[in-house]
Image: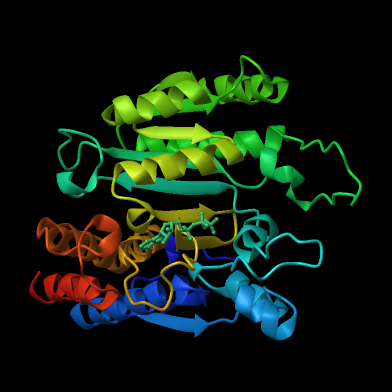
Amino acid sequence: MIVPAAELDADEVQTIAVLPGDGIGIEVMDAALVVLRQLQHRIPRLQIHLRHCAAGASEYQRSGTALPDETLQICRDADAVLLGAMGLPHVRQPDGREVTPQIDLREHFQLYQGIRPAYLYHEMDTPLRSVQAGRIDLIVVRESTEGLFHSRGQQIAPDAETVDDLLRVTRTGSQRLFHAAFQLARKRRRKLTLVDKANVLPSMVLFRRYFDEIAEQYPDVQTERMYVDAAALHMVRRPHAFDVIVTENMFGDILSDLAAALIGGMGMAPSADIGEDVAVFQPCHGTAPDIAGQGIANPMAMILSLEMMLEWLGTETTRSAAALLRTAVVTALRDPAVRTPDLGGNCTTDQMTEAVLACLRTG
Ligand code: ATP
């Protein structure tokens, strides 16, 4: 059982399970750990014990299991989990589906809150016209244990001509999600948008009903309800109007990628998957096999996931470290030359990381 982070003594050692995974997951994790070491150098009271764990598609190839029991136990015992990225297109289960330990982890530990912030650090990184830095500042809270992903485990008969996928909405799953989203909105600009498809799908009618019930307990938070198609349109046309968005698993999967596109792409999008007992921090992106091994992956999403983790750990020391790191990222990205190819620049992963380290040294 995880100790509520805020109750830990500020100088107590925090144990972090480190799961680099596959592809660029390993490269961006290296970057984040160098940054963590620099933070510890700046703040000696920041005591972190790292436990490196085997997990991912390559582990599946090696041992036949993508998430060994030992790794699951270390994750369970740790104060938080830092994950790179997992899965490789050519590593598949006997039925042809990809090995997806990152999704298995969410279900195994019931990490029901998928927190996906999108913040625009520099106007040059958005494909939108005339949007200033900071004007996109929203968070998608994605339900991550049920919804349309509920069907992902079903087997398809070889001769199947019709397949039905089930979108599951439960009272427990919805209520815990909405409480978390309202509490998050309270820490921000106090606006929460429910995204659903309640005009068509009965499951979404129920989802909205649960939302409306929980909303009564948070009269200080302004709410709005939006169909998913309209939400996609509005996120592009007026992203500044959103604060926290809460939605179903599949809708959240899609809209959080859209949100990432607004701020520079997957390389800029961190995330947290939070449950009652375990919290996993990882970039929104996958293993990017197309660029793996070239040393050009953007490490920012991973570094920002580290920042989210330090903030979430919640002690005075970890929160100071998070603030220091955030300032370093903001400062580093002010220089238009600090950009990997996904952002239109020609920095390597190491150069981008070094820019953050330089700001940490002087900041
Ligand atoms: P998954 O389904 O596991 O989320 P995916 O197949 O949707 O993964 P990604 O692996 O996230 O996709 O990659 C999508 C595209 O974004 C690829 O072209 C990839 O090179 C690029 N990309 C993803 N992450 C990064 C990054 N950190 N730096 C640079 N490019 C990235």
